[in-house]
Image 1 (tube, rainbow, N blue to C red):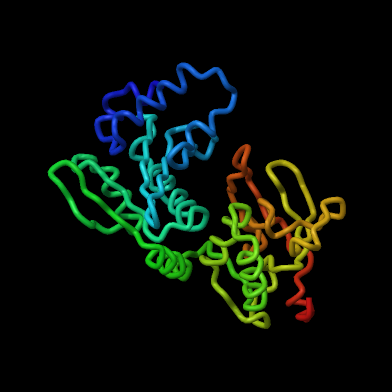
Image 2: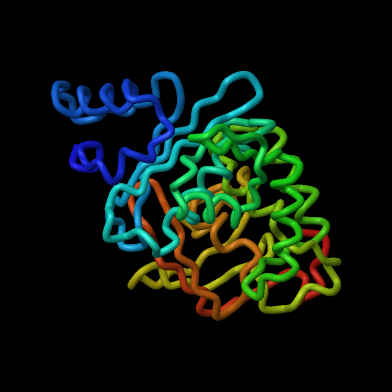
Length: 283
């Protein structure tokens, strides 16, 4: 409510004013603990959080045909200039292309909103057209996927998966094709694919066993395909939050991973077993 009543926030809002009024009315009048179904009318609505799980803004994704439009608001003015907008944009891109299956993502930015203009350009958007008040940027799914793959080669914290694992995982994604495997599909697309006989022995590949520290809790997991998952024996599906998070990372890596309830800090303390390192290529 405070964000939508702040003129310094709303003056650059590309959403029509009735959308903001609708959000204000829902917050002020509806006495329900969960408002997801209302906010998702005509699109998808997500809160944006910082790394300490404090809400700093929101993202709306509205799909019309094959195109999807993103509206981003960082409402907490104390967070401006900290590149949280770019982080929220990247998450919105992931949702638009992997969950909502958009062909093109569009963003309409006020010409005076210098921070947003820079953030969208930094994320790979290109200017499509402009009016005296708005600049319209777009990003195609093809360009987005190419951008993911190219950035993986320059990323020192990139992930690695074997050719065999990639083929099997893509089959899972093709069969599931819903939001449960959205993060997994994103990780496959950004991974560096290597021959199974050349993967480093400290990488978490499929059927690896690893010792993790999840926040302050130590746990030993065995990363498996969904049909083999069994939480009682530590067999963790690659489609689970933690399973997707650790795929392709190496011993010593630390990951901040957003889960439905909060952000979890995952440290891969040790890779106890990797099938490729042991010559077990048949697994």
